[in-house]
Amino acid sequence: MVTATPTTFTRDEVASNNTVDSLFIIIDSKVYDLTSFADAHPGGAHVLLQVAGKDATAEFFQMHRHEVLLKYEKLCVGTIAGETPQVLTIGPGDLSPVPYSEPQWLVPEFSSPYYKESHRKLRKAARIFVDEHLRPEALRIEESGERPSKEIIKLMWENGMNPMRLGPGKHLKGHTLMGGIVTPEEFDYFHELVLTQELSKTHGRACNDGFLGGMVIGLPPVLNFCNDPALRERVARECFSGEKAICLAISEAFAGSDVAGIRTTAVKSDCGKFYIVNGTKKWITNGVWADYFTTAVKTEKGYSVLLIERGEGVETEQIKTSYSSAAGTAFITFDNVRVPVNHLLGKEHQGFPVIMSNFNHERWVMCCAVIRSCRVVVEECLKWTNQRTVFNKRLIDQAVIRNKLAKMIALVESSQSWLESLTFQMCNMSYAQQSISLAGPIALLKTFATRAAHEIADESVQIFGGRGITKSGMGRVIESFNRTYKFDAILGGSEEILGDLAVRQAMRKFPKAML
Ligand code: HEM
Image (tube, rainbow, N blue to C red; front, top):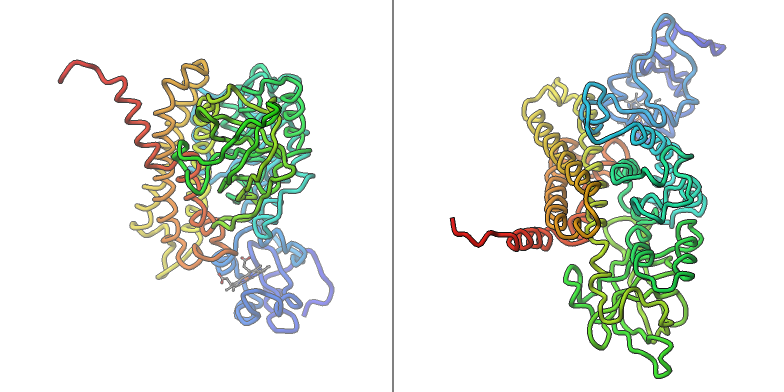
């Protein structure tokens, strides 16, 4: 029996620690003393006793994510003399060595016309941020349903992330972006794509919305259409810094993708200084804790958009959806809310252009995120199929599994290529041109990407089996994706509405000549 704890062991020394009173195992040439852990082991003490004193590397990686070893590092008491651990530990910010786990532009032997050095630096810095700060917070609150902490939003602000998430533009002026990696002037849609894709690697779909998703869609109408410069500056400053939260309040129980169906009304007060707002809003991301509501209302001769501040007559209630409450999805009631007339965004009765103005950008952001999440799922499946043995073969050794993976990889790669091609167009078109020429293609891409997500979610759960429907352990990313990918297929315009929009827009350019 080993009495002291040396840093190296022989395999024979480990073999003699094979009882309940002294239970050692080897995983990847490292020695773990599980004597006092065995009774607390979530998989039971019995399975550990079966491998006591032995090399349990294969058994361990069939049942656990690598991160379990990192979390329980204190159980490691040494290594096997003369052996070097083989399992790679991916550090914060590192690229994944798993094939197809990174977009092509990040694979060393591939080149891309789209990305410069500043995009690569931003990728690295953003991933370090996600690995070190955002994912740990996301894992915690995805489960508890809490609002993202003030500290994390402040950290995002200090790194210039919050204004960057609204894309290129004059709102970036004066901000230091990720320690100065990229200047406000050179920041383009590819920088935004990189940031959005990195931020979506939290493994928590609701948290991705919780981390200021409401600001990404609720603040642009204020920046672009607020008629009162002082109000605009104040709201921008408060929302970027996380001091206050904003959301976009358009959809209602009566109207989802059908914006024209809204019933919330705004009537001018007799004194002419206020709008009196009455009505309800539903499925409003971040609405539970929002201080500002960029709200679509019906006015006497059309639709208008008002910036409503939380106050008397504004009530918000959490809606329990299939993802976590960390997104703060709200049902909102406006009951005789008095809104000062300088809070009108754009022109009275001409709110449609204001409502529509950010839709393309919102949908494009959703494409960036869902496509990256699909790739995370592909990575999980590739890792699992290489680790998991069934019928004495690894899953990857089965042709049927390789076929599923081929389909999933092709869907991710084609979506990303289309996304990059459209992003290049965005970089080279004015805002007005984008509205005319890209609304259809972006709508189609979103529809395609969420259909791809549907296929990928379906195949991934088949590959993971029971673990794909289990919230913890090996399949937790797969379970979460299956529960939440539909949010992208509905929010920002449903697949059906967007497909229809794209074809209708194309028909406007249909030549008069007959075939
Ligand atoms: C350092 C050694 C080990 C640690 C720290 C550990 C820890 C854990 C943890 C935290 C879980 C909960 C699920 C998860 O979070 O993944 C778990 C589950 C489990 N463990 Fe271990 N474990 C160790 C070694 C082993 C070994 C060697 C075996 C098998 C011989 C084993 C078999 C299992 C089983 C069967 C489950 C349940 C998995 C499931 O239902 O999918 N564990 N273990």
